[in-house]
Image (cartoon, rainbow, N blue to C red):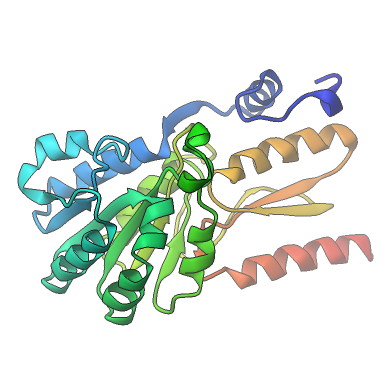
Length: 271
């Protein structure tokens, strides 16, 4: 890992691949594909599960779902407000609903419907923002999204889950099936390293400690947690022991885990 200060730390750079190899991390599927697999698995035993999408079955990796369950997918076209309204109606009729649309449009064009039809009306819709952040790349700022987290965090009775890898994605879908409140789930497009062992546990609202450390704690959410884990390993070469806390649930925040990490590092430096 020589000359690490001059090497770009992109997730797929040679340095990142070297660090991932040192950590024993293996590249897995994009989280969206793990999401699609988990949905199909759930639908095989529950005909109440519906997917509603706004011309996004391709980008949302929903073509296999549509092929296997053609009676359980609703295509509304490019009409995000209708997407959320129909999803809320299905949820009010006791269906398990996943409303899938690009994050940039879902949370901007249909914010009022998310607020009133889903959250304030307590309809247990799972809103799925795909291709979040800058996943759309060259399509430009109209297709990029950071506002989605800012906007949804301000809405009462709407929890937010941003998985870091395939394990968190699959576990989040399983947890969402019987979750008592609406959820906003957020996914990017790139393939992800697997960050967890098979013995890991997942609970919405509870952060997971991925790496221990006594000098600092890196708190991360979603796919940036991949970078946080690699950065923690890289810091070891500078003699810095940095823990990594996966804050997969953005709302509600696991404040206890944050305070525990802060107190641990504070007491270490003051003893």
